[in-house]
Length: 429
Image 1 (cartoon, rainbow, N blue to C red):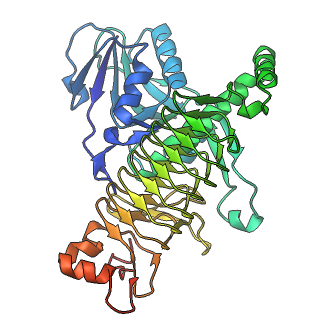
Image 2 (cartoon, rainbow, N blue to C red; image 1 turned 90 degrees about the vertical axis):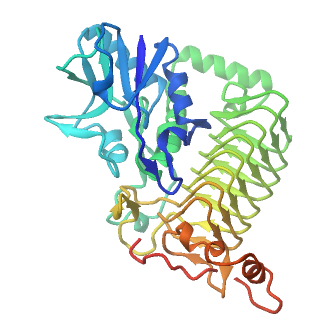
Image 3 (cartoon, helix red, strand yellow; image 1 turned 45 degrees about the vertical axis):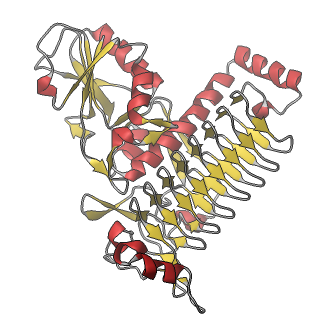
């Protein structure tokens, strides 16, 4: 079968890159798509619009390159489409909880047509056809709560739960979708499938004997924790699966890792704690760093005592010691993010922040929920102000308006003084 990739050239803020180049589950999206489709497609064609597909008779799967979909979803769609034997496009029921709760906010490519939602993935058994039928795929969503919270945190905002699909599909048009793709639709979905498979008696028995043989707790056995080559794990580290750790990694003393994806050449030092997070290739976490439902793209660093909750950090970025990204709005109102020129509700009762590529974020900062820092920015405390309460643009960066001497003087003052840029961003951002 031929796959046709329809380009989406829109750039995702604050990374200023198309979605296809951003990392999901420690892979660029285009590579993740290629690997998922490898069992079904033998060759590919890249076009700008659906109308550019050649008018031939080849079996074709066409999709926009900003889509995230996993292997179970593609298997279900291709199987049903082939059995139907007619041109069709992916569709979802109006009451599909995963789509309604997490895929619809902040996007426009999954839209309602009649009594279904349709997305930009198409199947043509004999080349392009003008008549395309919606083919409904059930994402098999499961409601999962990620921690017990006091009732006031969910007041007028709904329960703090995720609708986790066993078959994931998402259109990535905002940085929040990267969070959804990596955590609820990525790691959480892997965990849900693992749990679903473990309920089968044969699988449960196999997992039990594996844990017994290795003298490990059930979720810490090699059936749940997969470790690459030449990786050192301190005996005092605690790792629970399903977790995937790459090659040439170092996991230090007292580290706690729960249900994560760790790439190659990653160093996680003493006392760090990671839960439901993706740490991409080449990242470094010194002692006592904490990540919760957070994605780090390649070659980034989170310094000691920093705390990132429900965040996305771009490649080659640095987060200073003691910096905290908060995820809960103390004021009882919706969290909003900047999307296509205006503020829009994020669709979640809690969400962290986002840092672009090649950023330097100083020590001791506090970042409000839903805020973003644009790529190539430098942010540090100044004049006793250490709170990031607005979106931070590159133009607001300390080094944008200053000469080298002035920047050096502010970073290394001759007398007492020191510290954050006065936020010049639009207060409505």
